[in-house]
Image (cartoon, rainbow, N blue to C red; front, top):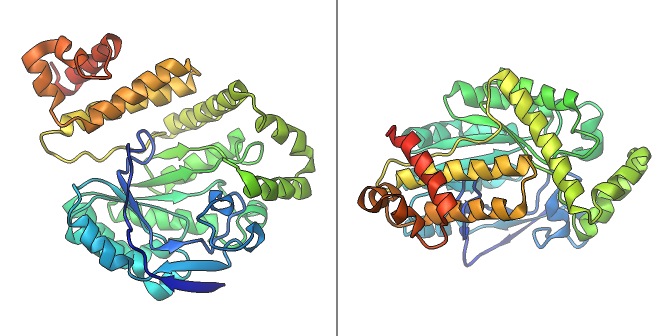
Length: 367
């Protein structure tokens, strides 16, 4: 593995819309390009984020944004506070400690922080994460696709820390009082989507103090697809036909698969008393009511996806959630001044969605 140090002109990515229903982040910032963990299903293999020359060399070259702490300091100083997804605890972090510096800067400017990680190295910075959680909010979600390392890791994640180490790290994060859980992504079709594995992931998460398990599907593109399918052919040849069907152009088939797996996760989360969604951090200010309403709308979107509702309904609620989330005036004030008609008059909000918003508002305000 080799590292290439370079300077960047801009660091923080400001998302057009929050990732509602999943991570809730408005911003993201990472100190490295490329990843030494080299998971075989990683989306970076087939994108601009792979600094190596070929997919086969993925993870052998890491680009280090050597001036990133200085940029993060400057950019956060002029951004409105909201959740920032950051942290990158691959092996080279031991040398550069850029992720630690990022957390120190987030602490200084009181930004809420989400870390999604595969490495127990994140425990090194437990002191800073604890302080961030006291001042605003911090959450550490551990990424995994299987409940045990045996058999699975040698094929798909030979360079990643063992799954058991991640669960042990989760336990220590939970003991420190920091919200934690599992990002069950990607779920590998016909490999890690069994009822037995899903239950084991949920059970282990609960046992280690996690409060949520959120699932996500496998996304393949270009050279990444070719490499992953070769891996399946070499190790699971009996699955080739099923994979070809899964990645066909049949959108309805993909929706049904997502629904089945999502409902399995929800079933076991209910059984073990945890959530199948990550709870949203909402700061206490004049627009907090909007954020809470938007959260409920995004959860309605997820519910519709699980039920395979029509696309029009799903997108109507998703767009409404974005509109409410980004509104500069309090929905509560609009309602108290103009009633439900005032909500319906907001550009992009129709009458049926306005009624839904009113129902949520009454629930939140206990009207």
